[in-house]
Length: 479
Ligand SMILES: Cc1cc2nc3c(=O)[nH]c(=O)nc-3n(C[C@H](O)[C@H](O)[C@H](O)COP(=O)(O)OP(=O)(O)OC[C@H]3O[C@@H](n4cnc5c(N)ncnc54)[C@H](O)[C@@H]3O)c2cc1C
Image 1 (cartoon, rainbow, N blue to C red):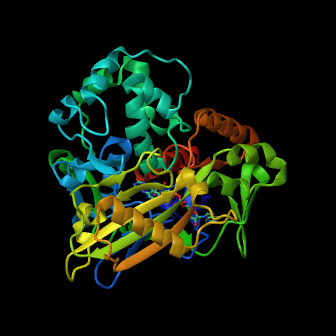
Image 2: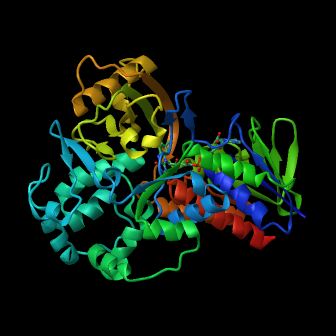
Image 3: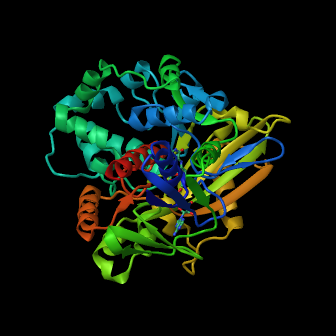
């Protein structure tokens, strides 16, 4: 019977362990090694005594796409259905999204009426961009930056403002450096397959796919836009850990980092931990690619270099709570294009999106200000050091009060600052080639090493979980 080691207990590693133990007639032992004292990785929800919840990492999941549907199926299997908090497509938190441009909040259009007239910050009706899209010139290059792809198909102004801001919200980085092929593969392929994004989307609309779970059916019929959980998203990773360890097959070891990986006899892998060496038949790495590189022996320098070639950005996450209802508008939040303010990426209106996470003893406004990302250098002190927490909190408070027009004397009732180091891997131009190179290096090394996690094929929680499932099934198939 085989031994499988999973390195890393974020959502990717937990999902891998869960799916391995579900279909594991040929597995004798699954060991998940987590270096920290808790599992969940970036998925972390802080609950306060007054009932309020601050998300330090992901805060909502989308129900659509293969990954979205898979997460709903998983949530149902984990018994989380009763605790799901839904944002419907008709809710303000889904329909109303804003850009902060030219010192003012600009609502993005949420209906046809909004695209046929000129609305700030755009200089012409967005409908003009969409009407021209099917006739835009195709590009046959193997990869293209997001900015160039969207600029070519939907106009440079749209790319400069809306897409620039959106990529800061999702990837905390510059759309001029990110790969369209790797960050938005479905949209990239629409051009390949249909010659146009709009034509491709219209053709796909008719295609019916059978729902795999009751939750997926509900999400479709009730028109969900996004969802979270009663105790915050961490409830999902906690439930995965509980389910994975519900049998003696799987052991989750916390505060137990993997210290080294090396080839062992008969095509197996030696896994070094604090007090033990495990000989594994397969290792699933669910940690950042650069961290994996540091675990490999020096003679695997080509593989190390390939793993190190995937960069990442760091983000300051500042959670703020203000007394009373202070938001001037309802909605999901607002993003800033890099031309407006390089280091303030955007502000999420958490209290509007998930009011169930607000404190229970009176009205409050909860916000998350995201700072830094690909513009972290703009936040450095004169000595080239990171700013301290007090300075970061002051920057976040100033951004919130000026951009949302709060009274000058309004002080937050809670402030929480975290520096999330190297938290979002960056799929820069040529990322797909890096992955092919990595796969061929691993194949030629003969190591039964499997790569999952946000460094490779999608940074969203949905992608992380779905890719972990696919690879876990692949491991079981190889046994
Ligand atoms: C601020 C922020 C907001 C986000 N918002 C959203 C959102 O709203 N929706 C969404 O879908 N996605 C969001 N994301 C992205 C998503 O949360 C992450 O991509 C995803 O959680 C990554 O999970 P992972 O398991 O691949 O990696 P991680 O969460 O990085 O987990 C890796 C784990 O491995 C452990 N580890 C590292 N080295 C070792 C070692 N040597 N031995 C053992 N263990 C080790 C770490 O301690 C960690 O627990 C957000 C991310 C961030 C940072």
